[in-house]
Image (cartoon, rainbow, N blue to C red; front, side, top):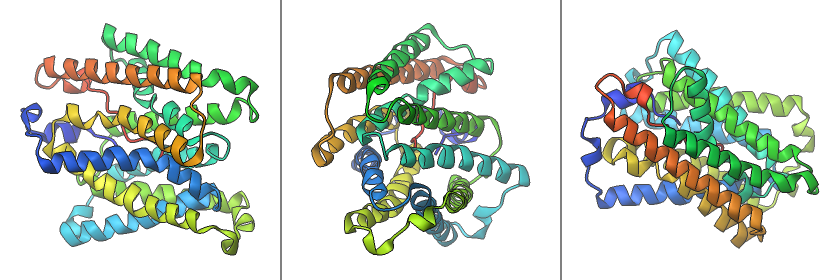
Length: 334
């Protein structure tokens, strides 16, 4: 989920002075570990369940849980939105969830979970490119981080030209990252429903229903054998619905209101490291030289870009925050 101009405008100006409490540490740990582990859970889920149907029903169920939460805590007024706001949320659901999460599930049938996470970690770099194409002028440090990060992506892609599955699945993961970035930029430039949880409910409903439709058109129901699905796949699916979507996202939204934004954004380069470690531990995914070198370069580049953009935002005059940044390192296809 992305952070919009409206969200930034509603934050107190001294957000960098917010105290790091025990609650903040706990919520940050949830985002670090849970969102880093979802790549592994997607791999387990995909071992027994067709990708689009699994991800589609995941978000339909998670969206239902969040809808119940919104109604119970905020009432029906929280669901009020204009037609334009709902249209933006629906478009973001297609880009972020179908183009992002759904295609990652397809790609992870052929790509290691840790490698997918490292390629997805480049999302903030694509956001910088898109913003530059729309007229923003990134700083020299941001451009340097962008060039460095794209070099890291190249290192990760190179083995794919001679791999068993070819370069196609790796490029599909890159497409996921690009589509997620487009959805991120759209969410920062078009109006969304006032309540961020309502926005997420709409995104999950539209994205989930679309993926179920795509899975149905692609014949996934014919390949679904419920009796043959292993318990590990069901556990992973339930984990993605409840913990990966509802719990971790709620913790993330709470952090945006209670913790320094510079601290919250560190998840963007912690999650890939967690994903690589879990993939190696549970699935024996190889820690090859390209994975270690390319991954380290991408994570370092993302850290450089986020730091540079955050500094630019703090230097901006009132009313200039949107142009100055920061780059929003959104949680990406997991």
